[in-house]
Length: 281
Length: 281
Image (spheres, each protein chain N blue to C red):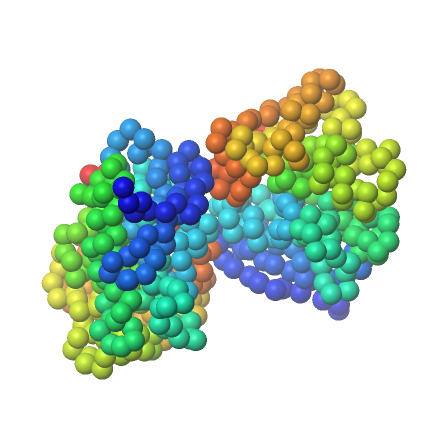
C-alpha cells in the first residue's frame, strides 16, 4: 500500500494532536506540506473542519505556534487545517521578492510560464487537499467546513468562499487583501501568474466577486495601526462592496493593532465564536 | 536625562502592550535585552509581577510568541517579565555547544575565566533587573512577585526561590532541571562557570537547597514523553526532596507531552491559577 501522507512532526497539545505532513501533490506537481490539528473531541465523534489560509511568506507554523488556534480548536472541537502558502522546492519557480513566487501563491491557479507548472493553489486548496483530508481523517466532518485567513490568506478565504458558494458554512478574515485587482500586491501577483487581462482577475477578487448577497455573513478584523492598510488592504472597499449588494458583514477596525500575529491572537477567540455559530448549528 | 531603556519593539496585544527593551547592564557588563508584557489593568492600578525564566537557547520571544502567556496575563492582570537566558554579544564569551555560553547562563554568577566578566545572571535577575522594573514601571507591584520557568529556567525559578526565601510569593516550573549537580547539563555548566568544587554547586541546586519546608507551595508540570526526562530532568529527585522535608508541592506528570512550548501552552492556564492564589490574595 502506498503511503500517501508522510508524517513530519507530531506533538500532543491541548489533549489533541498537531501533525505535520508531506505529500506528493498532483495539482502542484511537487511535495506539499500542511498541518492538521485534531482536537480531543475527534477521538469519539466527527468534528467540523476549519481551514486557515496564511499570509505572504508564512507556512503552517506561524498560525499553529503564534495564534493560540489550537487552544481554541480544542475548546470548540474543530479540526484545523493549515496548508502552505505556495508550492516550494528547488524545482519550483521563485522570485527574490517576498511577495512573489514561493510563499506567495495567492490561492489561484497560474496560467503563465514558468508559474503554471506548480502554482495551482486554487485546485490544491479546493479539490486535492479536501479530498485527502476526507480520505485520511475519518472524523473530519466535510459537511461542516469553515474558512479563515490572514492578509493574502484573508484574500484566499474571502475570494474562495465567494467563488464557491455553499462550500464553506462560515468565513472570516484578519487583515485581508480585499481587492487584489486594485492594489500593488495583487496587481503584481495576478499579472505575473495569470497575465495582463484584468477581466480574468475578477474571478479572484473578493470585492469584484461580491455580485449578490449570500446567507453566510462575513467577519473581518483589521488593525488601524497596520502598515499595509492604506496601500494594500483598503478594508473600506469591501465594506462598500457588501453595502452595495446587501451582504451581511461585521467589519471591526481595531484601534492600535498592527498586521502581526499579536493582533490575530487577540481577536481569534471572537472568530471561533463566529464560526461556531454556523459550524455547531 | 539618560535614557536607561531603549525600546526595541512595541506591540499592542490583548489590550495591553508587549515591549522589548535593550539596556546597559552593570552586572553583566553588556547590553541585555528583555521583554515586558503590561496588562490592561496596569493602566489604572498596580499589578503583580510574574517572572518567566526561559530554557537553553531561548530568549524573550519564545514564551511571548508561543505559550499564550500574554492572553493569560491580560486575563489575570499580571505583568510578565521575560529576561534573556544569558549575556550576549561579540565581546561575550561563548561556546559552540547549545548548552554552554550564550543562551545558557543557568541563572548563576560565574567565577571562572573567561565567563566571570559577563555571566552574572543571578545578580542580574535578583537585583539589577528588579530594581530597573521597579523604577521604570510604576504600576509593577514589587511586593507581589511570582516566578516560573522552563527547563533551565525551571531550575532558575526553583533554585532562586529557594535561595531567596520570601522574595517570590509563588513559584512554578515546567520541565525543570531540579538537580543540576547530578545531571550532565548542570555538571557541565557548573564546572565551567563556577569550578569543580561540588560543595559550591549546592547553592544553585533546587534539590540540595530544599533543607526545610516553606509556606510557599511549589507547582511542577512535566511531560512523560519529554526526551530529557530520564537523563537531565529527573523530576522524581525533587519529589523525594520535598517529601523529605515536608514541602508542599504539586508535581504533575503529563502523559504523552514532550519538552516543547506545545506542552507549556497546554498547561500554562493551570500555572496562572496557581500563581493567582498567592499574588491576588
